[in-house]
Each structure stands twice: as structure tokens, then as C-alpha cells.
Length: 158
Image 1: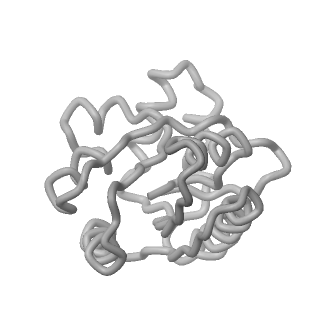
Image 2: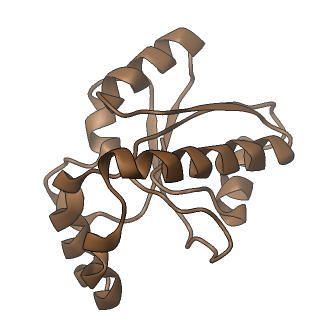
């Protein structure tokens, strides 16, 4: 589960987690939602990223975020495949944890990786994706922090 396109460092990290074992990915990405805008701004402030906090209202949300999410997902799947992994992906607009649980059951996944930026407020209250997924999927959930996105990559988030 991701909220931004994978950077080269993210791809290298997740594709080498299990050594040389063959690995495949089902990447889920949820477009940004306006309900999370305040939490994202608080996290930006906590990280000292005041300019980014001020720009939260300028980021596409809802239906407008669907196309950037699809581009970011396509970029991430292509990057995983270029690194030698099998990968497919889905943009998830509703009920992401239910979709995640369905993917885990369908693929008989060994684990879930939640690759996200730090979300201090959500993490404090255990409302972040990884904490919530741990109660839904029935397999280990590994939470990793994503690397910064390069200027040349498509952007989107969840």
C-alpha cells in the first residue's frame, strides 16, 4: 500500500527485503481525500515543512486526484517490474482496507508492506494505514517510510 510514487530508493529497498527470493507485488494506491487535509498539514508542520503545509489546499483531491494517482501507480508498477519483480496495481477509491484484505486473501500474501511518509498525528492515535491494516489482514504488516520524491516523478498521495 503506497500513497506516493515509489522512488528508486524505495524500489531498491522493497525488492531486496527478502534477498534473492522471487517476489511479486500488488500495489494499492488511494487518491488524496479532503478529509485528510488537516492531518497532512499538521504532519508537515511537525516535520518543519511549513511551505508544504501552506500548499495542502492546492493539491488535487477526490476525482481530481484520480488521474495523478493512476500515473503514480503506473510509474511505481513499472519501476518494480524494471527491478525484476512481478507487479500489478490498483487505485483504490473506497474501502482501502477491505480491498487490501481481499488482495491478501486472493493472492495468499505472506505480508503487507505499507510504504508511507511519517504521519505523527495518525500514528499517535493508531489511525495510520499500517496500524489499521494489522487488525484486518491476518498477515504481518511491515511499515516503512518512503524516501523523498524526485522532481521528475509523478506525484499523488493518500
